Length: 409
Image 1 (cartoon, rainbow, N blue to C red):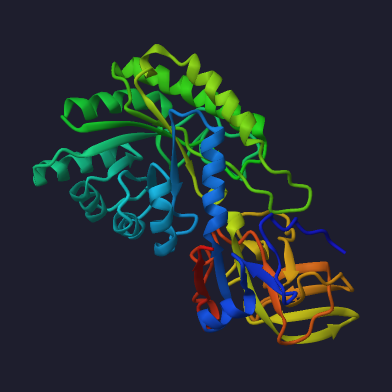
Image 2: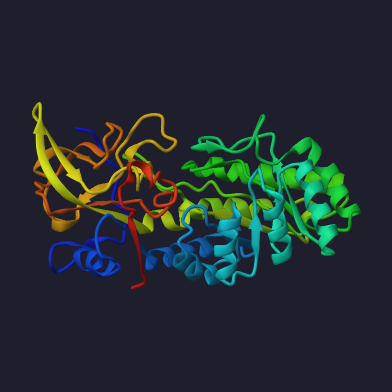
């Protein structure tokens, strides 16, 4: 038997004994969507998460949503009024963000093509510059258009976020301008007459160590202060990045957001003088939406092989790559799963839950304690609100795409 993560709060059995999401029975949701596999996002849980975050963070800290975590247009449009900005990483995401009516949009990511830079400049989107070369191209395009571009400098810090799932800073990286060169680039931007919007400093992602996040934020603000002094200009905004993780696996503990908020307030209270007029932002993706999503997949076969039970579903890694253990994890561990058709049922056996693909990598749960299940029953994979639908190889082997449903109870 192998452990699995804990089912997040906010989910319970309905009157039928089946899982309810946003107060709706799973079979009713599947009928509305038309079939399984299906992602369902409970917006009430996202709204609660944003409100809790606002309560914990200092008032002068803005909250941005990084829509790479989940760019479903209806979800982005619902989140936009609740946050202070949207952060995008492609022209496609930018179009979704613009359609939401968001007041502030920033565009990060290496390899922006000229047409993407032009589209951002025309739309008044802030471009987080990843290199001196990108700055030259953006300034040239803006000059041709006769527009003043909004430009921020993404900084590759000389530190990383300890314990993060993906380290975005420290050492040689394709992201951002090395911290030793950032101030000079700011001076170039200012001398060219651009609208300099500040710094974007992102040290890592998916961290569950509250003290490590607080320390990275302290170092980030100190670095922003040093760079502002060298550049001779105060940044209008210092984007502190994000990195807030969620507890996917057994043994993971949720972040202490109140602790992070208190520590951040202390740092801002003693911030460098050159940052007194600056605003700060936290850029979060999975932390806002990850726990609010559920992936529903129906069992199509039950078989036994060498004494092990396999529940074969109509879904799999082509929709939910992360749950299969093939999206950034070194050792495969189990996401929380449940028998949605009998949500309150007690475990009765050890099973493997697999998808429909012809690859041994397609496992949604391995050797987990589970209620007895039969073909026709529905399995729920939790923690599916981030890096699911669009982060998975949906075209692999030509199976149908998963469906998505937005629920706002």
